[in-house]
Image (cartoon, rainbow, N blue to C red; front, side, top):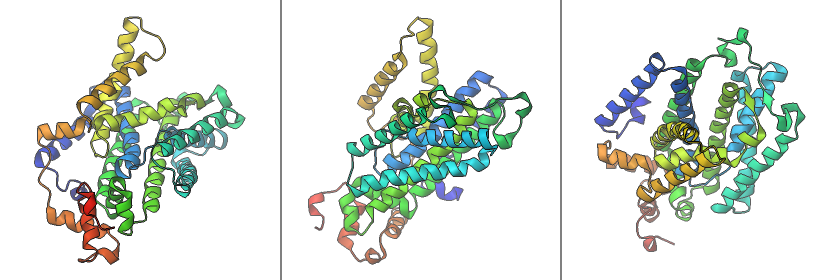
Length: 374
C-alpha cells in the first residue's frame, strides 16, 4: 500500500517525507507544551484541509460551510459522552452517521435542482447557519451558553475517553493527518479518484463518457463530511467546550479551507504545507498584535486576508507546486501505467479501444474542446 502511495514520487521526495516523519515523531521529546499545542493545531488543520480538499481539489465542489460537519461531530460525540457515558471511540460512529445524513440531504437538494458553483457554496453556508441557530436553542447541548465536557484529574490517562495531555493529543492528531494523507493518495490513484478528476475538469465530458457525475460528486461529499466529523470529535475532547457561535461560524469554515488554498488545492501535500504556514503564523500574529496594542476585533483576519491575497497574486496554484518544482520533487510519470489506471476508471463499454474519441477527450481535458465528439 505504501509503495502505491509513493508511486511516481522521486527519491529525493521520499527522503524528505521520511525525514519529516521522523522529526514529527520526535517533536514531543524536545518541545514544550506551548509549541506542542501549536503542532497539534498544525496537524488538525492538515487533516481538515485534506478532508475539504477531497471535495474541491478532487471533485470540484466548493464548500464554504464545512464547519457544519465539524460542529455536528463535536456536539454528538460530546453529548453522548456527557449524558450517556458513551466514549468517543464509540460515539464517533453516530457522529459520522449524522454528518453523512446531513451531507446526503445537502447533496440531494443540490444535485436534484442542479445547484452548482457559487450557489452550491451558498447552500453549504445556509446549512451551517441553520445548524448554528438550531444548536443555540437546544437545551440538551447547553444552547448558546455553551456545552462543557467534565475535566477531572482522575480521568487523566484514560485514552479510551480521549483524556490525556498535550503529548497524547499530539500523536492522535498526527495519526489523523498521516492517515488522511495516505487515504487521499490512494483514492487519487483509484478508479473513483480518476472519475472525480474527470468531473472536476469537465462534467459534460465526463457525463458523455458514461460517468455518473452526481454519484461521483455525492461520494466525494459524503467522504469529506465523514472525515470532517471525525475532526469534530477530536475538537470536542481536546477543547472540552463547545459554543454554537464559534464552531458553526463561517470563520471556522474559512479556517478549514485556508490551508489547502495556500498550500495548493488538488495536491496531496498542499494542505500539509499550508497548515505549517498558517498555524504558526496565526500564533505569531496574536503575539505581535498584542505586543503593539492592536487588540481590535478582526485584526488577525485582516492580516490573514492580506497574506492570502499575496499568495493568490504571487503563486495562484499554491505554495506546494512551486516548492516541488524548485526542489525537483517530482519524477517523470510512467505514461503506460497512467494510461492503464485511467482506462480502468472508464465505464466497461469504453475500454479496450472503444469510445476512443471520448477517452482522448478525457485524457486531455485541457485540450481543444472544439474537437471533442458531440
